Image (cartoon, rainbow, N blue to C red; front, side):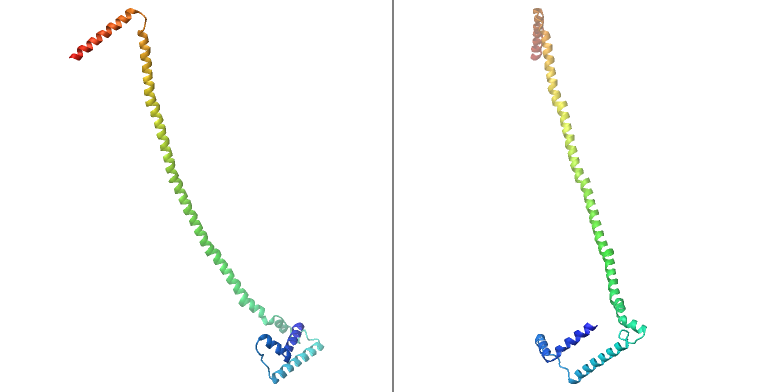
Length: 209
């Protein structure tokens, strides 16, 4: 309090003529000049306040100002200004902040969560369709190709290879049978020649008819 009072008195010296000129130069405009009565009233107020402070100090009542305890408590609490500020400003601002936080948590974040869950569900659905559809088609084509390959191999083994092996077996059998006719005995050869001649004659006779 004393420091503030001293600083106020010191700054009031700027309103004297030299200080006023300096302030006018800094502010860029002339300062308001009080009348003589205003200056006298201000000096009288300062003198009265100084006398009152000196008297209270001499009487030992400067700290209490001679007031009762309830009045001192009210003055010490700045006439309940902190309570009013807390009730009218701080508490409403905090309540509004809590409300906005609740709206953000329960509405905005919830909306974002719902959108994320929906996107996740759609993604899973498309993923399942792709696995069951596209992958199933690929597996079906692959299975068809494998079945066709197995069928082609079976036809090759049983058809073409079977025909080739059958022909080879027939040729081998004919060779074995022809070797039996080659006994090295002349009368066997004469019988074969006679039988062949008879077959040729019969075939010629049938052909002429």
